[in-house]
Image 1 (tube, rainbow, N blue to C red):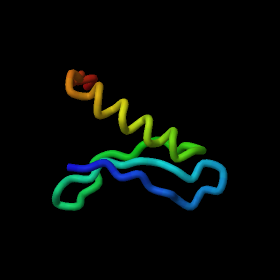
Image 2: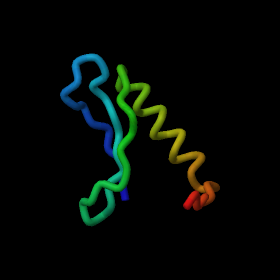
Image 3: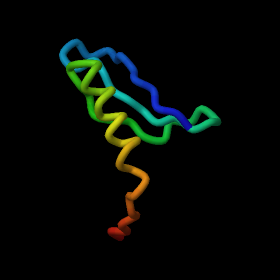
Length: 59
């Protein structure tokens, strides 16, 4: 699994990140960011904090 920082087509908020599985399937996509550094900071935050996340079933 890996994180990718991507520059999309938006001219006002071109940067976003996604999580991609080893088989190439996209698992998650972030919101858009105006700056690449903001997208990178968000990736770093998810990597640091997601290990302790729980699953909440709202069905």
